[in-house]
Image (tube, rainbow, N blue to C red; front, side):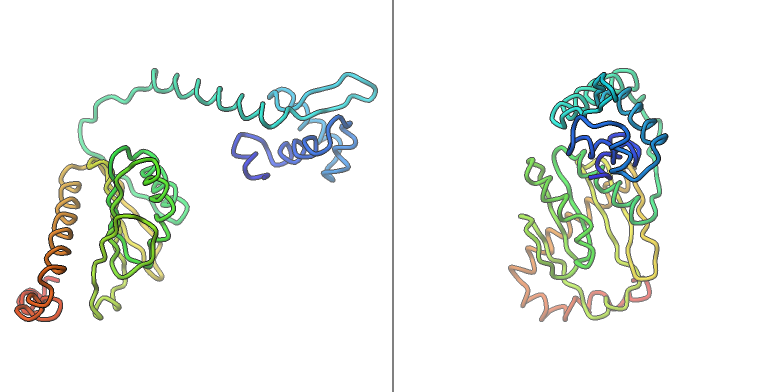
Length: 259
């Protein structure tokens, strides 16, 4: 709960004081200090700050007593202020047309989790994710939420995976894939923005964010070919294996040095 209160702009001590007042209303600053085990000077400073922010109320008495603004009222206030701020930002900071596509690099678990959440939250129509089964946990919960709000979600899993997502394509992988050091990952949202990156043991996770049309088209073409191959293998798997060998060996053999 402390972490959630900090997300709305409270310091650690302010959050602790608010929780104390929420659980035990109309008490003095001295009593609050005893409950949070912090000096009275610091607690009174935190209470003044909470009062200025409209998060706690003062009862003029002897001694002065403090009371938390009910959480329901506080949440409605924060929602109203947030909506007002977003309206102002959208009106005054409308993005100017881009002169060229952009590329941004993200590194580390936290940064990548955040950019994936942002991408999924801003998808209006479609999301296509191509990811190894070992890494589906990065996106599954977010994609399920997107499905619930009506976004068309397709997951291409490299290797078998267990998921509740509705539309999943399983991309088979041969034994040779077990020696691969990096595991690719891509996400295309609404056919105009993409993430492309990799995971792997001993590697710091890295993701590239871009709206470059050529890269978007490249990822869409890969999706297109995955769809075609999936259906062909369902319908003609035995015939394809007999003609081209397991995992299309006879087709790929002349190009091994490139692959």
